[in-house]
Image (cartoon, rainbow, N blue to C red; front, side, top):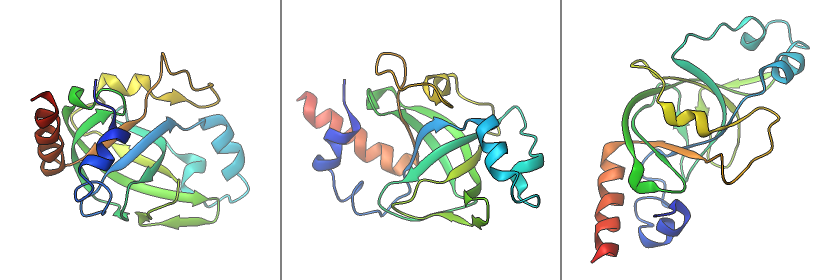
Length: 164
């Protein structure tokens, strides 16, 4: 099983230099806590938010580069088991850092809340994201990475080299 953090050192020109968007999904947002926090700013979008069945609110961060809202992703893979990647359709729709700061990107090095839309339906693997206040359990949870096919092709090439 390939672990993403091991691959970072093998192919830094793809992963660590920030040439391509890689959005790390760490956990599903705790909606009750989130609504309480954002209620202080009555004009914030999260106060009356109604997600569609294909949207999620996640805590996330970028890996090596700023990622603009509107960025489209077509691959998702788990941190543990990179070779288990799936083709998806996902769009970064909205980003917020706190109750008074909404931005149009996920800047490198920050961990905002974001709305991600999966127009063709949410992949089942997202059920392995830690939910809200739940404690992270390595046997039950994982982090997920959204990226694009050109990145995944290079990762797969590196995985194939390791098999040889």
